[in-house]
Image (tube, rainbow, N blue to C red):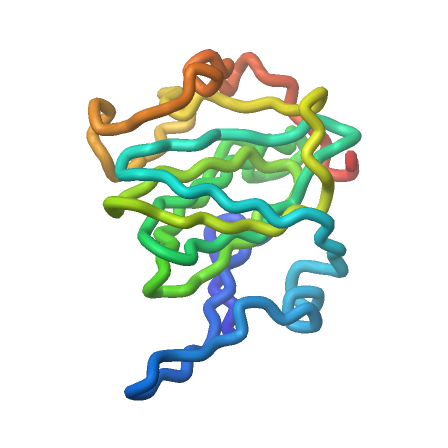
Length: 186
């Protein structure tokens, strides 16, 4: 496994070593001791999957304290642009984001710690997206940020007319309207 640094040091990309031959391929998709060494001791309590078509954008979501979530995300099949926005008001990267292409081909995983809003858009015909969470989903703490907020200036790699969002995500507030979190909050 290899660690790939990003513009925000707390966001990490893990790239597995893939062994391929005429039969197919094999790789470790997760290794606890390697993850803990780089991201810190984490206990995952919930695994989620979504299957979406081209242009579907899910996000930007997060959970408010005391139920914030860290997520280790990957694409099993297809290709997405994965985005994490720093919403920690005490961070030097507050309001900045990291965007990474994750795919079934590159097999990369991205660690999005607590204190980040997260979303992705499907760039392929279909995508199977899988992620591990370090806290359970709590509908009472569910929150988000508008995916198209000009203040965030996220390039989603697709024209706006190709992007499909849920009715719930269409109503998410702008970045300037959310209550930021503090890094030490859980």
